[in-house]
Image 1 (tube, helix red, strand yellow):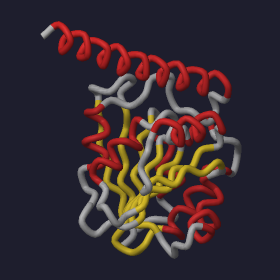
Image 2 (spheres, helix red, strand yellow):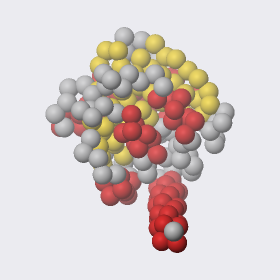
Image 3 (tube, one colour):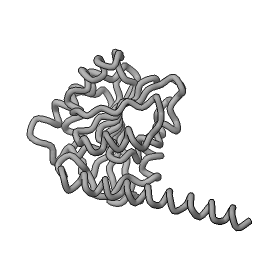
Image 4 (cartoon, one colour):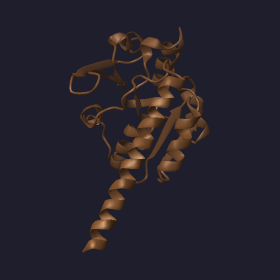
Length: 205
């Protein structure tokens, strides 16, 4: 009985250590490049569930994530993703990509050090034509001039008809980068996240 309690306690300590390690990496990534990281706090489970709710997981075969950080969204996507599907996670921060490769042992995950602006090239380099969904928490309001529109256009080009660009932001400015390239934009708001976030689902018809 004592052995069981000791083992359970050791497991809890190990999980807590990994969580603290992940949070520290996230904070370090933010301070290293705050322009490319939207918040000092990883997204909440409530926001993740709401953001991913419209996804058709049965038909999705390629999902793309911009700015995965320490994998808060990444793990939730993989939990829902079809066994035959793939997730390409793209981040400009090498530390985050190394962390994903080290911490997530899943053959469906392809972690890429690169820019969302080059998503078309990245998708082609990995043997795919188009993606079904793309999710992003990149802070469009603070990106360098011209980069937001480049990412919006490249993302629209890479999403198959019927797919969507899922974007969560702390500023509504992102709509101006989505509107020229997508046929329909649905929006929502999640005040229970810290900080509260505006959500967009930009669809290709």
